[in-house]
Length: 122
Image 1 (cartoon, rainbow, N blue to C red):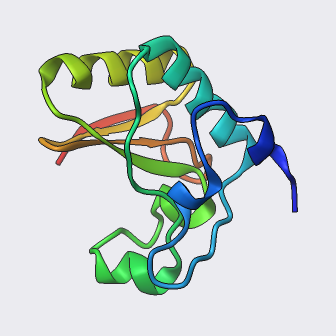
Image 2 (image 1 turned 90 degrees about the horizontal axis):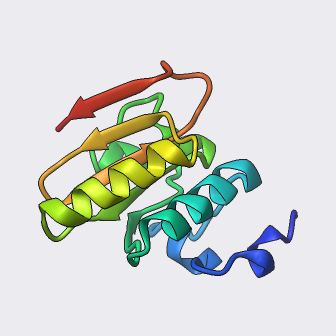
Image 3 (image 1 turned 45 degrees about the horizontal axis):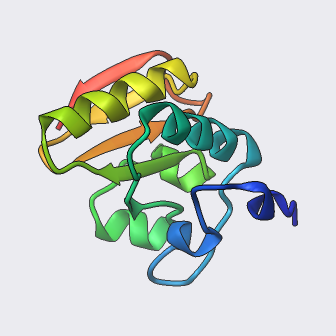
């Protein structure tokens, strides 16, 4: 296993574990982009969904091609419009090209099997 987790300043591996089985296959490249986005935003990123196994992805209504399945997607909690703008803007600056905007979270993803760039609403 690539032990890049020890080099991250803002995130712990456990934040990205699949809640049903504990698997965590987040990619180094995506995590480095997420770390950069967090640095740029200057506000905490609370992870509400990280890696998902296929079973959990189905349970939460995720798409079969979800960025979460490849370890290249995470949902970040938002508490207001200011946080939403800071997170979205920082993610774009960090090179994260797939962003989904919802009322209570922002999906950040970079799975190259999916359309790039993409910005959508939930």
